[in-house]
Image (tube, rainbow, N blue to C red; front, side):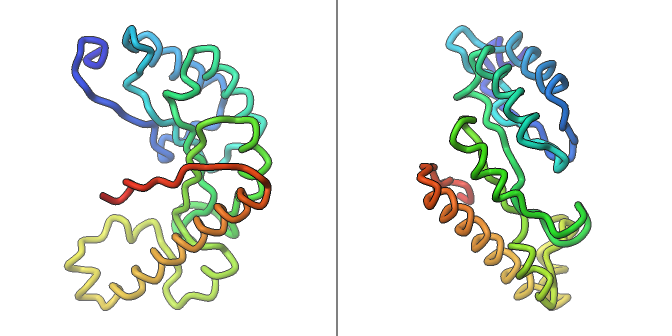
Length: 181
């Protein structure tokens, strides 16, 4: 309601919310439409799918999103890789599904929370979602700083792998230049 009244606030649905149902997504986007502005913008700018999403669900929801005029307003955030520990069963790699759907579903963010599974399983300190919640001081004092740096670099490598696969399939994409400003 604040957005509709002119307060410039935006949000995205978190993966921790766990939405994997197209009709639930329709309800959320319908509510966002009610609070959109006359220019078509919405306070909802990202829909971060649950890790149990499949392409059929995303395709159906893309139809709803387009009908509501949100195809370029609400980004679908799809987890391609996940941290090795503490969130989903491994191995977890949705890259092939991304390449399959990216040619006909617009505005998808390919999120990489961990490295490629074949690399992650070999690391002395595989990525762990619980590391996201650690204080910097504790990470340094524990001696894990280098491990977390390695985890970050493997996440970047996985993202680059997705970029290569999309390019090989003849698909274009926009890199998130300002992601870590």
